[in-house]
Length: 205
Length: 140
Image (cartoon, rainbow over all chains, first blue to last red; front, side, top):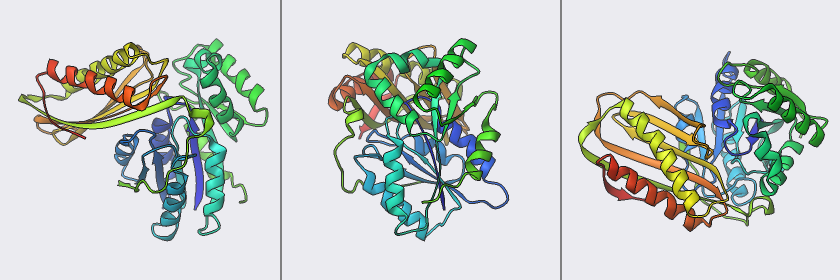
């Protein structure tokens, strides 16, 4: 099974994107499972995602990049030995560090067959000033962007061209190697392209 | 949907030490049925109420407030990042209007402890419920 990570700061549009990605990827018999992590004690995103009719595994009780990393590993093992999906889309919390999750997946790959797909990080263009100006948030967002293979500039339908350009410049400064694309759940811009890239890209474990 | 157990917990990443979260479930009931349009309006009001109460409690920043409201076989979900102009309310599919409502709420806050964030969110939700004539039957 191939693991695709959809990360990004709180409120950047991860759950909405995943609903669209699943629709684009689950064609021709491709089995997609969703693994979702809410940082709060009571998971909410899993309830929303389960409406898509896909297999949804919900991890609550803390952040999967640190506090409950062991649960991620166990869940990947369970998925890999029981349901065996072709693609697992992981939605970590909005405060997760993507590379830590990748590391956990590498460890899981010693027990079940997991191939690491791309890390997609969403960057909310409508809040670029907040994301880059407040220290605590900026440090976290910079780390998330730094760990990305693909950065999707989200909510471009609601942001000014100036804010989008500023977001793209900031992302390119932090991670010059990341591919950057524009994304709008509202208009559908970028969804198909992102699904294509996520399916195509296979990084060896 | 299935949920994993809590299992072994490690310490928080240093990058998100200042973020704390809370979550709760409330089951409520009132004397008259809840329609879909009313639930949508209520969801928006709830986002505003929890945001405001959280800020009054001293939050530096609202990371995310998310709620799922289940009633009449349907589901309404709402979320906000603390900006009144950026509240999303989606979902639907309510069959016949019901007098029962189950609310699941989750928030991630910067600058409050988990207990402080929980108190603020619970208090806001209880006042909100009272305004709409809902009696809280149980809390988790």
